[in-house]
Amino acid sequence: MSTISKPRQQRYHRKHRHKRSYTFMVISGDSDGVTKRLHLNHSQTQWLAYSIFAFALFLGCYIIYSIMTISNLKAIQAEQKQEISDLQEENSSLAASYESASSNSEHIQAALSERLKNERQASEEAEKLAVPSGFPLTGTTPLPTQAVDDPNATNITKLTDKNKDTATGNPLVLFTAASGSNIIATGNGKIMTVTSDAKFGHIVSIDHGNGYISIYRNEGTPVVSEGDTVDRGDLLYVVGSQNKTLGYQIQKDEKYVNPEDVMDIKG
Image (cartoon, rainbow, N blue to C red; front, side):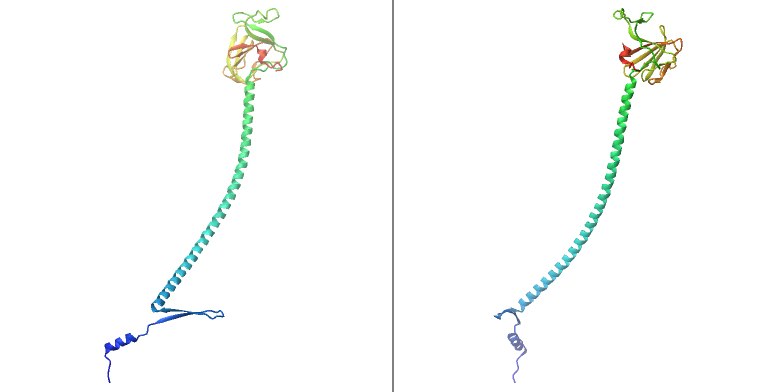
């Protein structure tokens, strides 16, 4: 009985070892019954298996990534919706505040306009009252007599048709006060001087602050002092039986003017 040595047996088995192969069949369901076969050897089968595994792994990772991305996007979308809701609520609150502020602003503007209007009217009224256009006596008195005062003369010159073109001196009007009347300021201002007067006894002058100075000459005792602030109608002299004559003059920008050109005769 012959025996085969071990090395020869190994060579024999390697020579007769069957190579593994795989056959894939695709059978068509059509009536022609076409069958397609794909033969793959062992290496090709392993490569295909690894490829399918790698694709499945990639697909699984992609699905997980997509799910996480979608979840994050949903969370971001929900957060954005909440922010939009908060912003809309804040915008509504701001709109209400703006409407309230606008309403308040309109009221303030209206009040400011009214105040400015009142201040302007008050300023215009003050300017008007500062012009010595009032009547220098209370009550009803006869119309004044035109005269001139020459500082170098000892008497006042009353104007007549005969001397009105030749008489010289500063314009002056003479009033005769009625019983119970008093001498008053013809406009708002400040007492500039209270002095004696050789022709009338006393002089009270008022600076009206606008270029006008009104001058009141009378024998009575003045009831005001230098520096006093007076308004139109304030008392300057109390008229009695001995001081019914008033000499009234007006200066405008340091020049004497006819008082009747400034006075409101209706007083």
